[in-house]
Amino acid sequence: MPSDTYLTIEVLADPGIFKDRKSKFLSYVFPFQNIDDLKPIIEGLKKEHHNARHWCYAYRLGITKYEERANDDGEPSNSAGNPILGQIKAKKLTNVLVVVVRYFGGVKLGVGGLMNAYKTAAQLVLEKAQIVEKIRMKYLSVSFKYEDMNKVMRIIKAHKLQIHKQNLAAEGEIVLAIRLDDFDVIMQQFTQIHTLCVQAL
Image (cartoon, rainbow, N blue to C red; front, side, top):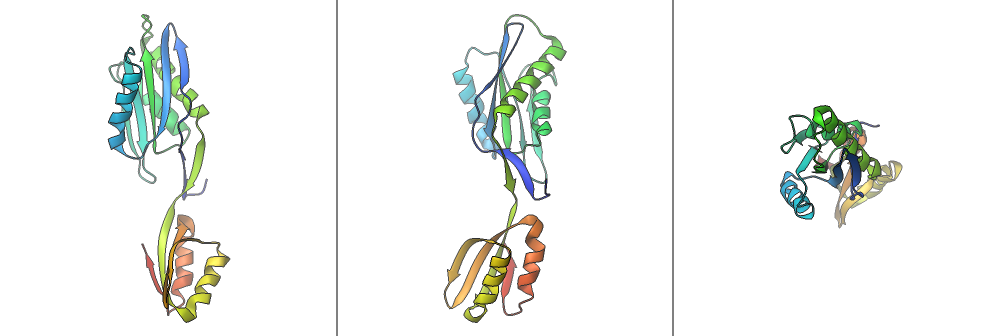
């Protein structure tokens, strides 16, 4: 996978269901970009599953530097949140939250049984999720006089660059969205035309 791409999900998937010795584990995956969204999501699942015993979760945020959290919600330490997080990492996903809701069936599963149950439940919902590859973009502002417009457009067409916004008055300005791996090379091409004003945003 190129260094300027990452994997995530954009839409909700159907829940995963795993059962073991009368306990039922329902797993959910959410697109997740803001920690402030965590509480409403958990509270929503608690309302929906008010008879459940545990609402364990893990999330991973960030593109180059990850912020991760795993929560056991009363299950034995490291028996729930970490196995869920492990599945997120195994799929190389980021900006996602996985929550596993447990209905206790009256039989204790032991730490090993719990780890397997939470891992499997997370795995099931992630297998149902539609994983998308996103490209990391960086923005470049190019300001130019009208007589330089053809030179600017030639570079844009040659590299099939995406125009984010433009203002083509007598003094033109174009803001380009450029994938991160290509940014330095393309910026250099524009800066070689000395009459242009080129700025990374």
